Amino acid sequence: MASSTEKKPGRRIIVRRSGIHGKGVFALTDIPKGTRLMEYMGERITHKEADRRYAAEHEHSPHTMLFAVDDKVVIDATKWGNSSRFINHSCSPNCEADEIDGRIFISSIKAVTAGTELTYDYNLILEERHTPAVKRAHACFCGTRKCRGTMLGSKR
Ligand SMILES: C[S@@+](CC[C@H](N)C(=O)[O-])C[C@H]1O[C@@H](n2cnc3c(N)ncnc32)[C@H](O)[C@@H]1O
Ligand SMILES: [Zn+2]
Image (cartoon, rainbow, N blue to C red; front, side, top):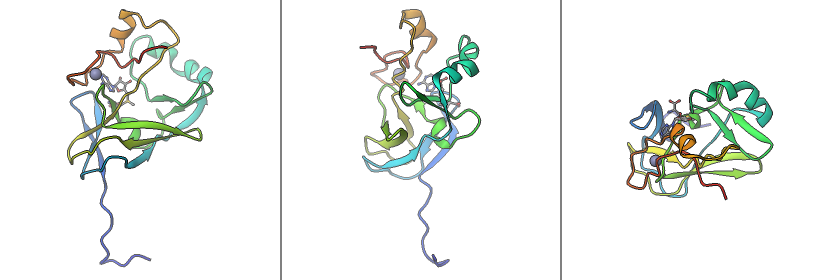
């Protein structure tokens, strides 16, 4: 058992208001490149169930706490989850989301200095055509030099 004098590892991240959108996740300490930070947690549902729950809502707003793992599973962090559900998108991200055995883990892909917002590229792929209007409806506010203007990715 850890003694009371033993230094406990500090928290590495905090959720607070973001300049990109709503709340975001920020580094509290310097984080080396290649650090696995957290798992994207939430309820595991089908795409059909996700559509049943949110399709109508998404007609009016791009806001979502869904993460599509593959063509079968979506993680819905709307009702419950952890800090990862507040990580915003950036077109020049410092993290990535990796799928490992059907689970999603967020890791740094650059050295991150304390105080920096953590981001990954959502690279959203919709079933519908990514028309200019659909891209605009998913406008990106990451503000980076390489911002592509949308959270949508390119369809192959
Ligand atoms: C998982 S939430 C991230 C947390 C969100 N900021 C909040 O406070 O709820 C994802 C949603 O945040 C918004 N968002 C995240 N990154 C964004 C960006 N770069 N530009 C515009 N909106 C963004 C979009 O509405 C997106 O669907
Ligand atoms: Zn952007």
